Length: 352
Image (tube, rainbow, N blue to C red; front, side, top):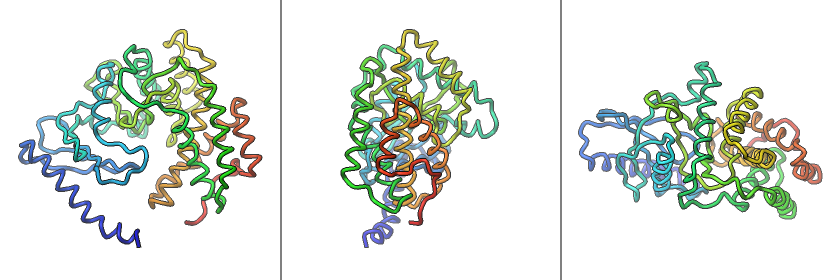
């Protein structure tokens, strides 16, 4: 019944959101401007290219009436973080107009050259990835990198995200639910892993730093040629997270030799960084992120009827297995054995 009611309400909601967009543009006094919808992704945000403006612009809509699925993000954090990134010398979209209560922004349009599209057109990957790593180095070396009042990417949130593996992925492949005792032991394994994180490797963490959210901006110089998108749910955390999400991309394989080269580039620039501590957080967070993503991709299929993400699950599963086979994560690997959770078996989802 609830699902049927939701489906009946969808056209009305779509009309309301369209009116908000049209009213916003009208209030700006832009005549003859039309909106061209861009392809949607896994989020509730939608982007529209403005046609007929003096310079390239996009309309971002993150509607306030959307479901409060964590992380519940509105456009206000996007504005604050975009401004902060530009102050740090990075490339984030300029904000031209905003209607915060209705979740609407007019932002700079970086064009169509996402890293993903460029790589799919066989552009040389090495300079693109080097540019992305250099942007992270700029961020991690900047003394004002944390001068923004953002929550910490703390143990609770990291564990809650890792729980998506047992809450969604496990039932989908086994047809069973994990009991509460087993879930609590899973949490405890993660608590012990996170307890060893260094306290002196803190930075702004963009959290979705990968090729889908990076753009090559031809009008920029140096690291400002690397445009950042989709950073509105940034938090503060350790250095390794964004570099790990770039190199262990859920949607794209990054060759091992290129990964090694980029890690060495990063370490060479970061000087006296404790490399062992960095590598430890890198491996633990890789396992955490891949566990989260496996759960999210299954949830998108089971709950939201979005099946296109299933194609990426075998790759993410492989990344997850690589992560937990590291000696530093022996306790996590042992947990699966104790639970009889055959995590090593190649993925095959059950029917919904």
